[in-house]
Length: 268
Ligand SMILES: [Zn+2]
Image (cartoon, rainbow, N blue to C red; front, side):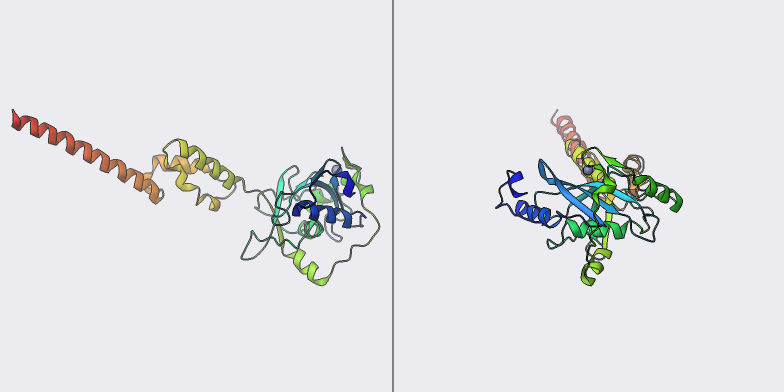
């Protein structure tokens, strides 16, 4: 396996991913994962739906995109098989629930991520970005159909799982239960874009980027933009600042003009 890639093995991410690829060489009955032939930073994985849930008998395939900073930064997961829990072809990131949602520990691995994904799928995803609220029956139907699902690169995914039992320690099982998956926050991405646009045009919209995280997914940031223009009183302090600045400028100009007029009249 090591000879397949032309990567600098001194790079921590490369070293680490090669080790993980070696450890995950043998598929288990619950998960399997392997890097692509030509890219060590993209993997394809297969997981089995958790027993006694609507995902039981389901087999789900997807991509794992690893950042260059891995394992300092977490992997991103993209599900490809329709499952009724996550939107397909959408990047979902994992984080740990609790006080520090961005936490990811370098000691966790692709295996941790996959086990966490299996455990997380049956949790309620109401309202979370990238989540689908399909009924249990719809999910069961998708689980049955997933048995015949094929990946263009890997073939029939059902055959990608093995018969080895994945051993999970108590500590690991506690950890994977605390992992949370969610799609990239589209709202904050919009907010970033907004911030970018407002850099070029002097509009008060940039002031919303900090508060945009609180906007619910259904609520478009453009609505706020409209509010900002029609009801300046309801907008944030920065808008008042720019409003005040223009008032001050106008006052200065008016004063200057009156002063000039005054001087002219009295000098004549
Ligand atoms: Zn594949």
